[in-house]
Amino acid sequence: MKRRAYGKGLVILVTTLFFSLTMLPAIGTLKPITFQNREFEKERVSLQNYELPPPIPVNMTLEESIFRRCSIRVFSDDPVTDEELSTVLWAAYGYINEEKRTVHGIEGIYAARIYVLKEDAVYIYDPLNHSLIFYKEGDYRGRVAQYEAPIQLGIVWDKNKSSNENYAAAEIGEIGQNIYFMANALDLGTVTTVGFTLSRIGLPSNEVAKIIMPLGHPKYPYNFVYRPLVLSPLPRIQYSNMSLTTAIEERRETDSFEGELTKQEKTQVIWSTYGYSYFLDKTEDEFFYHINRHRTVPSAHGYYPLRIYAITESGIYRYIPNIYDPIYGILPLAFLPIPMPVFTFMMKVKGGDYREEIAQASLPSIASAPLSIISVLDIERTRPKNFDDFSGEEYRWLWYYEAGASAYNVLLEATAWNLSANVFPITNKEAILSVLGLDGNDFDPLFIVPVGK
Image (cartoon, rainbow, N blue to C red; front, side, top):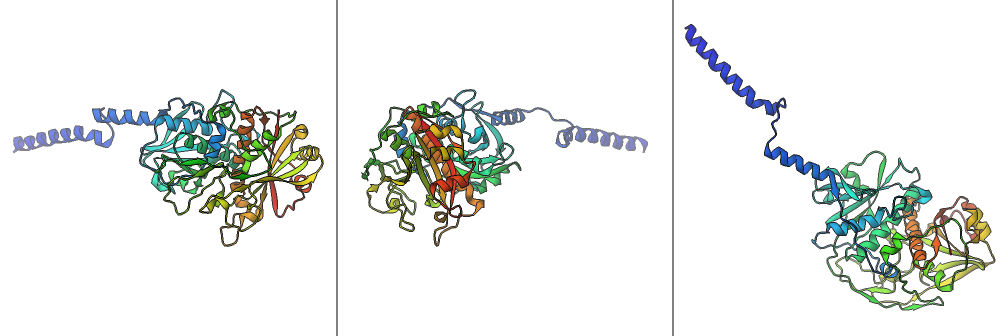
């Protein structure tokens, strides 16, 4: 009896010992490193640090890059190469040297962050090391995107770096321009879309999603035709000798301005703010509408509510990109099914030298600038009848985005013509409105961009 009990006890002891040893890894007290575990850890480490190759130099002239700026919404399944992604990200927010970035920070502050959504995971672009940092595993592209593409770029405002939403939006507008320019030059495409869905990846509390830009190869190859059809007393836009990459790298900024500008130089930089392309876009498209002639910047819902004023020694002028534009409610020229002529000119508002008054509302040193460009929001044009109303203060950042994109174009175009420029906030909006003869209930001055030698 005792022997039988002893035998049973021995069997129980051995069985218990066996199962306890085999189950230890499952309950976490012992975790042997297996081949599969090593491979998993190796994969996790590779996700943490995604090194990007050097950017590709783009030799397309700056003006052609601006002519070709357009929005693409239908993409092929062709992948975006690491070299292409590297080039777009560098242009968007990279470093030129230890101190200078590819875009201008409003008041010297850089408050944006770019999330890169790929098939395998979400990454954060690290501009300093030009690499991608792993953020979250999984394919989130379909959860956030309005348009399907191999890559989705989500751009956010970091409130820890800037408390000014509008200035951060202007900076993001500059980033968006370089993404447009560089993507198109590489035969990729993109479009600016609403960004709130980016919150689905789980953003930190200090970050606010602003825009999402899909990135991929257009389903249909680009087909641009050079056809200016411009009727204007202004000189025709000319190609400079500077490439897109060089203009970004050599962007010339200054706080002091002097010299005189030729009529051609003035026309080049003013056109870059808000003008029309000299190209007709004959690219095949599946979208429910197609734009034949694009503008130098995008605009939310195609409203284009900014007014561009040019201040010179001889007076104040308003830039009219097309004679149809000031006529409120008319079908935008670009949407017409046939290519229409572009009637562009400068409309004189008042004569006399008002540069000193303009300078006192921003920065005294710009009083000597031979040309200062002021972007002013026409609030009425942000609430067209029977369309979305974006006139409220909560939407003002949209128009600062557009003004930032416009101002950045001036920085590049000025550089291409051996000029210098800068972007300054307006400290006294009432003074600017008074000089321009505008009502503060209907208009909001956004930025001053002085240009000189």
